[in-house]
Length: 446
Image (cartoon, rainbow, N blue to C red; front, side, top):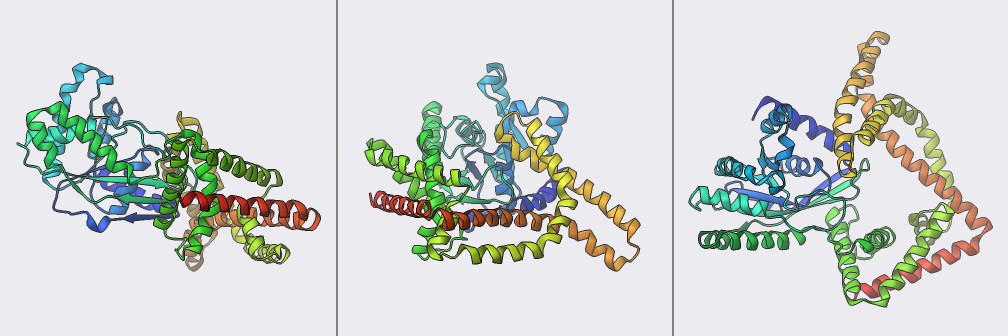
C-alpha cells in the first residue's frame, strides 16, 4: 500500500465517521478472507459508494472505474495509487477495448492475493432507490480474469446494497447489506463453451442477487409515496413489533415491506394505491401548510400536553445556547465553504455529497489549525489550551443537534397554538392519520 493510499484511507476513515451518524452492516462475518471476492454494489452516491464499504469492512479494497476517470496524468496517478483499475467501454471507442486485457490481468493479481475488488455493475450513478439495468462490464472482467488464469481463480461475488437514509444530508445513517458469497463455477463452465452466453447469464445473475440487497422501488412515480409512508408509520410499526428503532436492519426491513406492498399494488393496477396516494399526499400537504411534522402529531396522540413539552425543550435550549454559539463560531466558515464548493462544482447532484466531504476534509483541518494558532497566542496556560483544542469539532457536532432540537421546539410552539385555537384542525389531522395507518396495515396483509 502506497503512502498516499494509506493517508487517504486514514483521513477519510475519520471524516466519514464524523459525517455519518451511524453505519451498520449485515453478514460481514460470512465474508471469507481466504477467497477471491468481488463486491458488486448499487451506485447512488458517486465516490462515497466505494469508500463506505471499505471503511466499515476494515479490509484493503481495490476498485474498477470507468476509463474516462483516468484521462489526465494527475488523475491517472492518484487512481493508480488508490488501487483503481480502468474499465474500457464501447463509449470510449472500440479501439480501446483491447486495453481491458491489462485490467483483467491486474484484477487477477489482486484476487490471487485475496484482495477484494468493488465494482458497480449498473454503470451509472443515479440517486434513486431503484436498481438500474446491469451492464456486462463486471461479468466480462470476472470471466476474463478467470480465463487469463485457466479458470482456476475460483472468484466469488458478494452483492452489496448500500442503503442511505439520505444521500446528501449531514449526520444521517447508512445500512450496508452484504450477501453471502456466491460461487461462479456454473458460469466458468459456460464461458469455456460460449463467452457471450456466459457473460449474459452472469450479468442477469448479478442483477438478481443485487436486487435482494437493496430497496428497489420499481416505478419512479411511487418514490415519494414510499418515503411518506416511512415517515408516517416506520417508528410506530417497529415499536408495535417490539423491534429496536435504532437498529438499521429493522428500519431497512420495514422499508422493504412497504416497497413490496407498493410495487405489488402498482403491478395489480389497484385502486387502493391511488386512494392511498391521495390520502397520504393530502395529509402531508396539510402538515406542511401548518408547519408541522408527523412526529409532533404522534407525540400529541401519545401525550396531549404540548405546552409542558415546549417549556421543557425551551429550558434545555437555553442551557445549551453557549455551546451552540461556540459551535457555530468555530465551524460555520468551513461548513459554509464546503457546501458552496459542492454546489458550484457538482454538475450532478450525485456528486454533491462526495465533493462536500472532500472539501470539508481539507477546509475544516485548515480552519482548526488557524484557530489553534490563535488560541496559542491568546491562551498561555496549556491547561486551558488543550481543552480548547478539541472543543471546536465537538462543539460543531453539538451545535448541529442543537439546531435540530430548536426546529423541533418551533414545531411544538405551532402545535401548541393549533391545539389551543384550532383544535378541530388538529383532530382532523389525527383522524386522517388513523385512516392512513389502517390502509397501510391492510395493504401489508396482502
